[in-house]
Image (cartoon, rainbow, N blue to C red; front, side):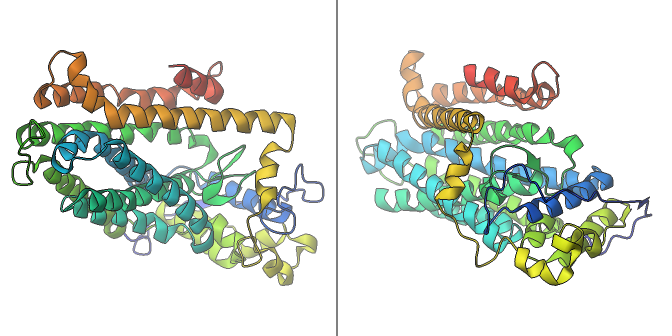
Length: 422
């Protein structure tokens, strides 16, 4: 749906942005390069404009299309484990190497696209990464050898890993202590979702549960009915189940990418534009957002100029934090350990993500392979039927987490602690 073609009955917003205090910032983490106090001051002005517009149609549309990224992420993460048994029977290789290739792709994709969306913007990585996943997902089904399969799978997961940080940044936004798509600590600066609805990020995991459920439902009949039972005499002709699954999931991913591209006009992040020194474009995005939601905003470039030293628009170009002079160096890492509290928070989050990544890899990649022996029935039908049953349980926690983060005595910390403890 095109934003430019919509002319709803407008509701004017009397927006009087605050004038942030930039003379004594709490912490200037990226002095002379990336996240300076001027940028944070202008981001605060944009945040207030978004908050005044409120939660509307654009944000709800974005909620659904951002969920496609979560859907694709879990789809291709569990795909590795779903096909490992029939693929090993056909190609005769050590199954751990397929998992290794997948995780190499995840690491490379998160690094490349996470940094890239701070350079090129969020809009095109948002679309490109999902199409990379779908196209190479289809190609996985035609892999003639294990080397080709592992290589294609690495490209697929690089697209998946790149899509997730872009989706989350566009939906919720960056963090003040680490800018843009690479940011993940401390206070949130929303790209489009007002602060009053930031709890919705937790509920995006519903798409994760739905993705795992749908993938398991598709895999159940295909793997069970079109796979070799043993390694003896296992040829491509009688082991097409995992290939059919790749074709199906690749097709679904491409359909989701097409829905993103053709049915929804994604606006560039106003904070990215402002950080690149394009304040006029950032203000234009705010007005398009308000129009799509049936409102108007009075935000002007002059409001952003007030955040500049001396209020001079001529110095705006000097404060384009996402410019050629910006570079990543050790200060960006040291800032995450700048105080004892920050160091503890950073260390705990790294540990949680590391343990989560380890457990998720072990669960998704090897559980279908070993589960049959536990139940005393190693048939593919029983194995994948049980996987479907377990996948059903993955859907409700997304709703529960969205509720829990808003409960005063639980909140975000309590929700993370409970989930990690499980």
